[in-house]
Image (cartoon, rainbow over the protein chains, first blue to last red):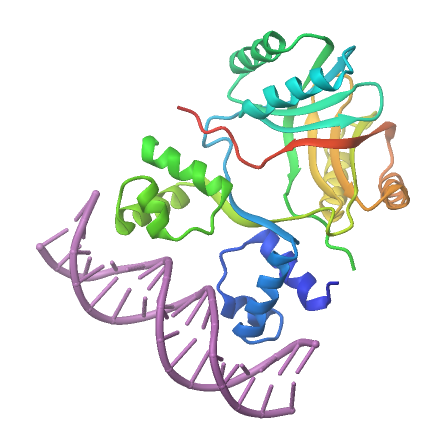
Length: 153
Length: 153
DNA sequence: AGTGAAAGAATCACTTA
DNA sequence: TAAGTGATTCTTTCACT
């Protein structure tokens, strides 16, 4: 289980994982060695999955974020695996969930512009059969975005 | 602009930013100093926004992901600012977009379970007036999730 | 873009509470 | 069982080529 220092450490690392052990250790009132041991433990136990660089989408020319809602009539596991494999290969697909509610799937897609979205769309519909209804909604404004999960008490 | 080595570097760092300069440098056929200079440049120019730890939601007891679709009748900038401020303070809200389409806003929420979601929901509706229609859709299965943006050619 | 040196950080065996 | 000290090794950073 996690104690207060572990949770604080996780909160800090979710915001910025570049800080040195000394700085991290100070933040939780420890010296670097016990802090390092905690960090290793949090990694080994799987609390920390990875440390990654977050890039700027505008800088990369990715100005359009789409949420794609999908209905299907295909429900065989074979069809499903083909669908999963296809989307795993499309780098524009950042996230993909099977959903409750009216639509079966929700896909998050990041592209440069409408023209690129259209290319993605064609790749999707040509890549797999059985997609009955595809509704695309676009983000006009990003109000909040974080990868930091709420760390429970 | 970005050359091939820059793009490769960004791709690698989006997957794992813990590797040493030596390892990174080898991957793009350079020695550590020129690789380090590229990295600094990519940071200074804003391509790299941050480096963060990604945590495991299951490990943290966060088993429920919701996509909340919201319609409103309020469109004054004052109301909008209150709404933005409220959601910024709610750690369960990971992402929040103003949208095209039928609904005005889309919110991504991460909580432990339905009980927690209900608490979040009440906090939301009690925190702000003017939300006409709130539709909650839940992820049953995570098929794909990455923070790695597609790095253009 | 590369070399080599200096400064800084991570890692570990060992000690202490 | 958890924290701290100090030594060693590895990394980053920088002046210079």
